[in-house]
Length: 287
Image 1: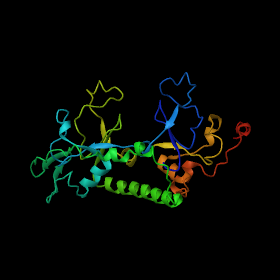
Image 2: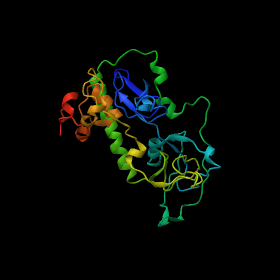
Image 3: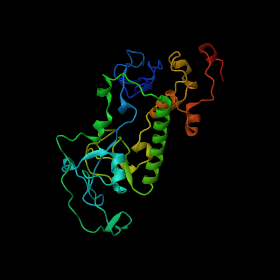
Image 4: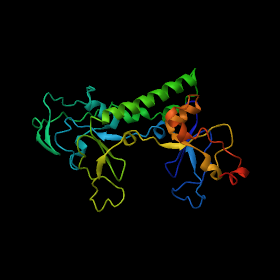
């Protein structure tokens, strides 16, 4: 975000990578009818590119379930960090129980978990900044105008790291269970979901605020946050009449591509790099 501009809509979750926002009329936020579905663009931050997904940290994933009354007894940390902790990463501030004997289960019923062990108190220090707060660099960008010496190299490294994280999370999720709510974006790393009644999605009153847990996929842990692909950032803004010719890509990929990185092969069809964008007068003649 030091070199490439990022803008977000104030009324809806739409994100656009470029110096100015696009003119595609697909805003469904507050007052969109008065604006003819045009977006209201403001400058974005890194949390608009990498959407932070939090999860409860449990000392023992097979121990006591997180209940609504005890939800404040557990730390909230990024879901990727919790997944790595359960996979063996040691963080002093977030300890985890390491078993030497397997947990015995018949179906979904636990027969032998080795007993319950009370974990340490949550790590809450006044001088400790949240892991998610460290990612938000919007406030730090206000007084910074310096640019990296080699933007293309930085973009290539960032894109490579993003793809490696995706592949690594996919491999970890084959062995360690991750659950997601079928109604909202809540994620829980563990063999079963928690019992916190904070789901505010569709018909949550019928479920007493409980989440509808199902197996998660990589996109639930690392939301791609798709944006329109801009081939020429210095050209005219994207228009609604030509939206069928535009491609899309995750915000991280689009940001790195505009900074000079090569388009990954797995995203070329999605970004429609081989489609010729016609003029507005020619669009109605295209098949």
